[in-house]
Image 1 (cartoon, one colour):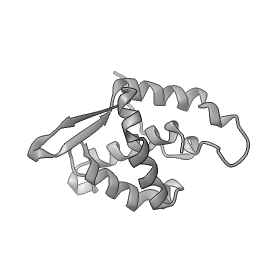
Image 2: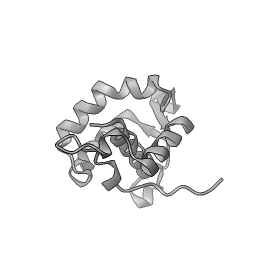
Image 3: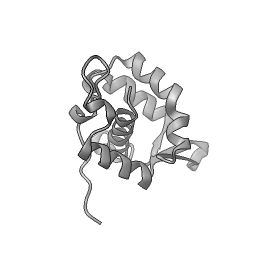
Image 4: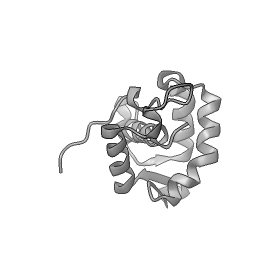
Length: 124
């Protein structure tokens, strides 16, 4: 799984989770518990087997945090929340626009991020 795909999936999950409860979201920042549920529930729609997504994120999540693309912080009720940072959003937008290294490669290691739904962002 590419870092581009990982950032794209976090972005999609964040958008889903922030929706009002009436629209199926939780109306709050993303927690790891809800993120793992999102992965299990949406993996097939994202084009990946559920167990593959869970393993990839567990093994590489700390890398996304250490690069500054994701920030983990203590939330209310003792839950840890995480967000895609401005740096992460900028990197995702760059890869969405120009492609990551695997977009040009042929074979089985192609990046699926361009085929994932994209979050619409309002101009600041």
